Length: 258
Ligand code: PGA
Image (cartoon, rainbow, N blue to C red; front, side, top):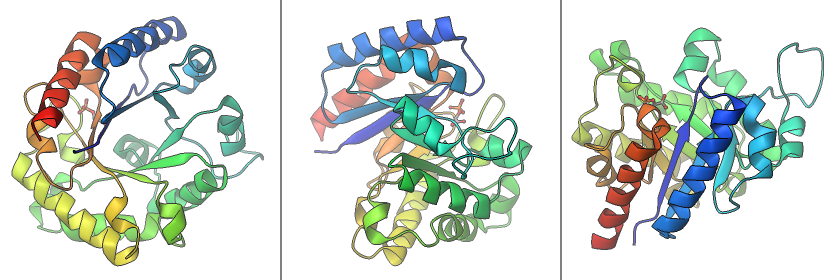
């Protein structure tokens, strides 16, 4: 039976109070859903991590949106893996396209962050994705392969078992973007799997690959039909819990039919 990992990054949304309400409600929805083949996670802004951790449903993973690779130092405005470990988060989102676009994060920085996360036993959720320009030039697969090779450089077969990949085409993310065709997503996921197996012959088959970018109630299950699509990474459609609950129910139905 297919196991599916589903989660959301809140980006720069929700105050602490709003976040606590969300976390309480999503916990009730998840318990009611009662589907062990769906693993849920959510990723609030840093300010909400401590208060939410205190009331967190232990079955749900809690993540942070970014961190520095050093444990401490003169890096004003940054937060370290040691600090996040102290909070007790489960995963760290690395390389979201907005971080790459607005804060100049590059694959070499991300490689350092991946190693830092692994050192502290925090699961990296590594985001990769091509721009529309890359896609139009027909080089999506090359770009994604390059991102994987640089970001995962020096990671061992054993360590990679604790990594999640999110494929998020930059052109499919956020308001006003283009919804990706499921066929395209399935093909790209197959290709990402090939690269992972090439890099990690023993464990590459088992690394979960999530899809993100304008996932909604209409298209969620169609993406999951791809054999190498192991989960969904959702923005806007998961911030509204009524919409998110419907997606989770559809995914549960889909799992029970397969
Ligand atoms: P979206 O965001 O679902 O709102 O397009 C996805 C993301 O940024 O991960």
